[in-house]
Amino acid sequence: MKYPENIEAVAALPVDYMGFIFYPKSSRYVEQPVPLSPSVQNVGVFVNEQTETILQKVKEFGFDTVQLHGNEPANTCQYLRDSGLYVFKAFGIDDEFDWTTLEEYLDRTDVLLFDTKSPQHGGTGQAFNWEKLKEYPYDKSYFLSGGLSLENIAQATRFEDERMIGLDLNSKFEIEPGLKDINLLTQALKIIKNEQISGK
Image (cartoon, rainbow, N blue to C red; front, side, top):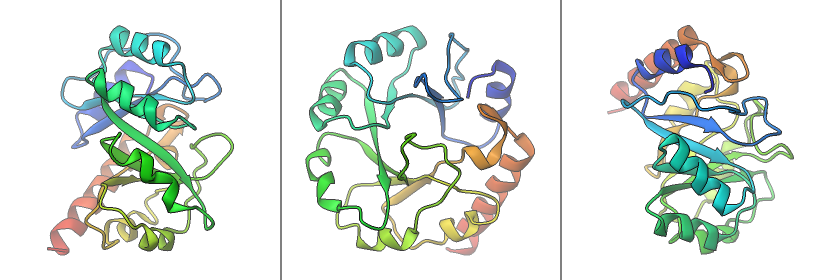
């Protein structure tokens, strides 16, 4: 998210989190302060950023949740949690991903996020092979990210794993990078709601 009117429109939808990307190489990079919505959890997203810079942006924007989307070590996650922040840690998944690399993060993060592995750290619009998630051996809750769209969101919602607590809707629901399509998001949220009801 990066445009005030669009932020307000998305916040009016039944969403729980809204991300603001502070990675200069991203086309969604937030260069100047924008108004955050009090009705959702606002998340500052960082990629291999200095801890001091993260804490500076947290203070500047008023975040209480951060998402680390690079190769940040587990002790950075712990330090930010000790600073009072709720910490998401993202991992790029492919067919060769070694789940044991997550072990040191399990007690140092609040939620994990599984995205499609890519050199640009997300935003590819490509989904990874979700069958890989059936090998995930830990109890830690996670968000599913990477290539979610109107075409596959019902399938994602029906994925039988109680550890999956959320879906990250991003590039397939944009008019342009950082500008969400309210109509597409509305359709997606209806699908999610219907699938949850019919799955009970």
